Image (tube, one colour):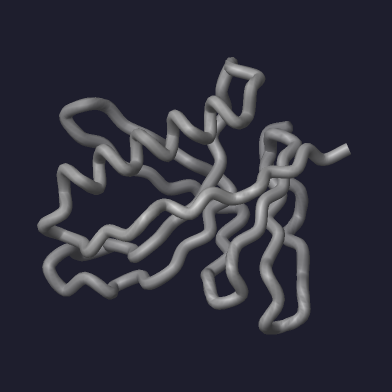
Length: 119
């Protein structure tokens, strides 16, 4: 699948499910922005990351860094079929990058979410 399925409409105030092009669906909180068809990422000395089916929160909250978010979620493809392993590795990548850039953001814990394989 080249693009994710259409956006899922939900009642205001409800968690928002986001379909991915990988046959997975995950939820973001009701007050987050649902950009299910968008992609986002970052790059640095150690490499880069690009995610699709994006959810984001708190854009523009950091006056020192243009284009920063307080939180972002997304999905990326992988040859590894163990979703738990892939998710844990990506969370560690993000935590490493955020620790390195701590001067730009107050960092909390990365909240893990449950991914559901679409049938």
